[in-house]
Image (cartoon, rainbow, N blue to C red; front, side, top):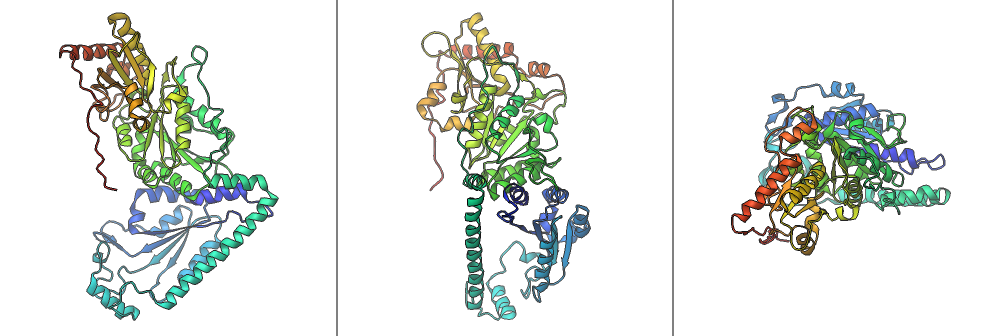
Length: 562
């Protein structure tokens, strides 16, 4: 959020209106928060960027759920944060008054070139006769007797009264609310004058904070012309798409976890967001995947920006907690994840995702798109940008994918479609479903099945399971009849494909180090093996008298009680 404020201020503030965007970001954290790895990642970057609009109030109460912090947390937090490049202030006592804390906050506001941590020594459960300073007051209610004793002993309240707000407290909060209303009215008046003086900036700022997609935002997305345009890796198609959209959507802001060249996510002409260049929109996250995703959440929550971030798909594992928060919070963050299968080659099993696609697909309110070519990648970006309240993972290949003659951006927007129709009349003999770099291999296999065995094969590209499941039953059945032998082909775990297919070609073990094509052949994703397994599936059901279980003929339960 502090990054968003600093960037938007540098973009929209003017010499005559220097405070249109001038907010500060306050954080309240505890000992447990500073033990989490993400605190180190984010705080290190905040110090590097000199985020003077960020003030963290650290509740230093020396207690965690298990007991005293001496059990596991004895570092010198002050020295740690000073080494990050923060200003660190210490307040030793807030039990006997808040003047020192107020003074520290004022001091933090004066520091404009570095973030501030205010280390506040507190005692948990303060005032509780038997639980003050103990872990028992951390994760459980004090209990009625203890609450009553604390009220009378410390605050002079009537122990028999529950949820009572004293008149002086209510009056103080009303005073603060009135002050906030006055500040808002003053800002509105200031913005009206700003709009007269700078109408283009004001209109653009309003559009961005209203979450409106500019007219023609998708007009420049590339269209692949079969037989003319060059084959490439889908990460290169992704690069073309993000640059096409960025021309009309300056709110796109983000970057990579130290893999910009590999992720192909650099927006041309976008300078770096750094301490001295806050107007830049390229973020250098460094090797901080968890913080990277969390920072994007904060930027989206602030408003006026459509954040994106990038890394290898396998490294989404480092960011999953924050990605889940994107989905839970309905933040339309764009995740660009390249090197999306064993097809990344010699980096080997540590970098080759197997379970990651299914892990992401199983997450509620998460859209996962694995495009097969340039046209489907254009659809992926249109889907992602339209998904204002749903994060989208755009999965990209490292290796080159063969051109698809009949791919379609419009059809890909429905989640799945027939990229190759079966020859002749009537239902197909076999349906193959694939995603990404496996689609063209299925096309080659389908041609071989037709020419060598007269097996009329339909190839379905399914870039996005979630979108396909949102389509009408009529459309879904028109693409996947359900009662025709159906085989899924994806260089990933086969889990999750059983609802769409009778048999699966997937990855059931970790990857290996080796050249891309050798790995695809070894793991069964060559066109010859795909054709062989397709014929085997057709023969399997022929031997059962042609009785093919209808995948569409089963109940769907809605179990959540609204």
